[in-house]
Structure formats: structure tokens, C-alpha cells
Length: 264
Image (cartoon, rainbow, N blue to C red; front, side, top):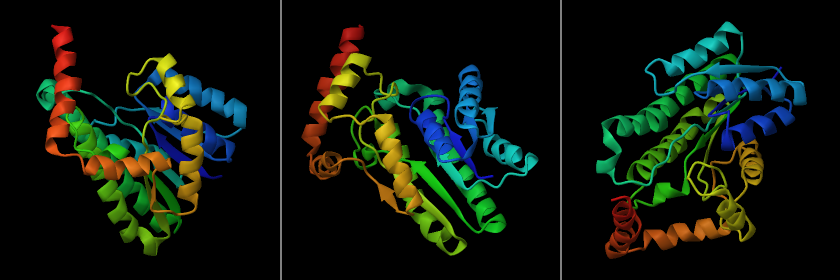
């Protein structure tokens, strides 16, 4: 029996990863802090695809969260073939507005949890199976130090850099590490109303979760180092990198300052 671990598995892209991996015949350890939704989807996926599912409700920002995941794996004698580190958060706010608790949340979820889960499960794959696939979710914003997404882009940049380095370290162990750096995906993460999400998909600004996940898994199983969806996204990385500081200041004033003025 082949197993995959998916974090953030109860909604959005994580749920789509769960569906498509199950469709490929993988049993699933589904991890999320959304307990009710997680259990419901684990049952539905089991019934739909006939694979085993384990719903593990867990806040990945807790200090012992990575050990909790590996503990479930060892308790069930599971050596996963696939790990998808997908869980994430997003805000469009100034750093000063986030507060200490939210800042720590970014660090704990995007940096510590991804680092520890990748390391622990990579070594489990290496020593017990001599093979495996890890897919870590970064973002196209990792190249975009823009106002309003400072913590999101910075921690996603860490995920990309860490994944590219871990990939080289794990090559001799048969474990492949791929990092996905998507542009916009039509999920609820960014708070865009559904009608605008559908419109953005129609004009090609956003990708559907189904399309993105299908292509990301294809890249992972081909042992590619990195996946950026869409030619437009790849070109925009260069354009944003060339944006002068006054352009970023304009984004701050139009996007952040006006938003805060409306709230007052």
C-alpha cells in the first residue's frame, strides 16, 4: 500500500492534492486544523476512491506538531512515498498591523513546520524505503518583496531556498524534493469573492486548483526541481524584480493606505 501525507488537506489546494493522489491509488494521512471538515473529507475520499484515509487533526504551529505527524506514521507502520507540505496562511497587511501572534504564526507554519516535516519524513523515506517524493508549496511571491505581503513573501522565499538545498542533499538517498511556486490560484486563501475568482480563471489570471495540482504532481513525479505555473507568471517575476522602489511605494499607498482609510 502506497501512502501520501498532505498538510492543509481539508480545503483548497490541499484538498485537491488529496483527491488527485487518492485517484492515483495513494492512501492518505490528511493533516489539518479544521477537524470536522477533515473527518468528512477523509470519509468521502475513502468511499470515492477505495483508499485508506487517516484524518489527523493538528495545529501545525504547535511545538510538537512534526513529531505528532511522524508518531501517527510510526504507530501505523507507514513509510510514506509522498509528502505535500501545503498548509499556509495569507494576509494583505502592514507588518506592524499583524501583531506578534500572527508574525509567529507565519514563522511556525511556513518555516518551522515545513523544515521539520521535510527533514523528518525525508530521512524516514531514505532510511526505510530509499525512495520518496516531497513537494513543498512556495509561491511566485517569493521573488516579490512587496508591501502588504512582507511575511508571506519572505517565508515563502525561505521555503523555496530550503527546498532547493534539501533536494541536493537528498539526491543520493533516492528522495526527490520539488518546490512549487504558483501564481494566483482560484481558492479562498486570498479573500477574493467567488464571482471575481471565476472571472479571473476565464481570462487566465488565476488557475483552477485542479489544473495546478495536476501539473504540480506531474512535475513532482518526474523529479523536477521547481514548478511555476503559467508563462505569464514566469515573465512577471522578471518584471516585478525590475520594479523600482517608488513603484513599490505606490502600491503601498494605493493598496494598503487607502484600504486602512476606508476602515476608519
